Amino acid sequence: MPEEVEILWKGCQEEHGLTTSPNRLAVWTLKSLLSFLECEDVVMAMECKCGWDTLLCVDTHHYAVGLLAREMCHVSTRLCASIALHLLQLLSAQELCWDLLAMAFLVEDDIKVQLLSIRLFQGLMEYCTEKSEKILENPVHQSLVPLFFHCHNENPCVAEASWEMLHCAAKFLKMRDLKKLVEEKLWKFAKYLLAEDRSRATEHLRQALPYLQRPQESLQETAVRFMGPLLASILMCMQDCCKAQLGLSGTEAAVSCPCSTP
Image (tube, rainbow, N blue to C red; front, side, top):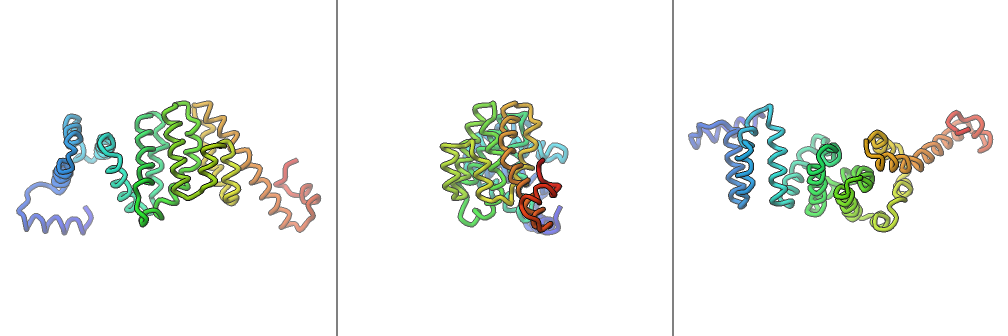
């Protein structure tokens, strides 16, 4: 238990004569808050699935938090988005804000959880305040490539949710050309990213590589098409570097540079 929490807990014990443990008090408080918000269905669902007890066990705590999040998403996406945004602010202080994005794209075996994660992240963008926009800006940028790939997911529900979220991300980032591209010419996505910032080609390529090994053929094919312009851009950049270092003309550099294509 962090020192400041322990000090606060001891103060509460002395002042109010509490006999329960801090963890049990936290669970009781959470149940009371949900009841106050008229989320009795969540309280009862957690009760039926022994969720409150599993929250108190170290070995099952992570599972119980996920269970609680899913039950709350059924009741209010906006409430979940507000909570997730607060957690993101805490995580960002430790440079761990990418964890939220990973939720949406590392659960290939559970379509329902994947959809809930995508909807939750979309809710974050829609309901965030002006102050929190800067916190979300980098994670949203990082989400563009995974979202593009999942627009080609063989599951139509995931594909549609990803397309909607990509559209929302373009609007959030105030990228009008990307918003139009999503609506009309999604196949030009890689070229658009290069035009926006060619220096991030390697980063985009790194994000695309795992999709070559996904079981879905549609994702594999999309990865091959997506990586083509990126590889061409990287090779061109390497050639330019060779020319600059060797101080040769274009023709000589193409012959001499080890980075050039035959």
